[in-house]
Figure 1 (cartoon, rainbow, N blue to C red):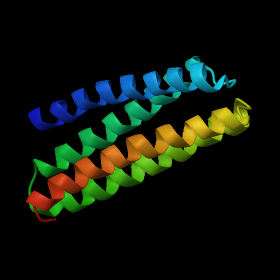
Figure 2 (figure 1 turned 180 degrees about the vertical axis):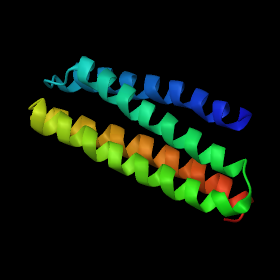
Figure 3 (figure 1 turned 135 degrees about the vertical axis):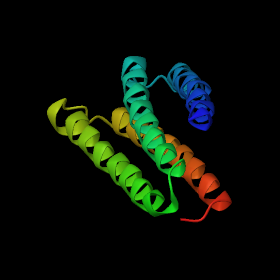
Length: 128
């Protein structure tokens, strides 16, 4: 379980980088991007990534038969929770202006690429 904390701690600088980039974008382009939206989105996506990594690393520590199911469950849960967050963000909260949609997908892609790269890095060392 110690390996998962190393990657969870990597999420903190990644979120700071995303927030700083949003601040620079807002100050340079003068858009209607709300920093509160960026912080809320990156927090929710980070929680989803943490849950995904915990489930995945829990499966890596077990016997090889359960690794496949834990990997499948963690990736499926991530994409399901991401779609639920998209549903809540766009349809229930009515955050459909262009800067909100753009920031949603930038944060989504950044944290998804991070999570999938961690999973692939671990799978390269171990077989399913």
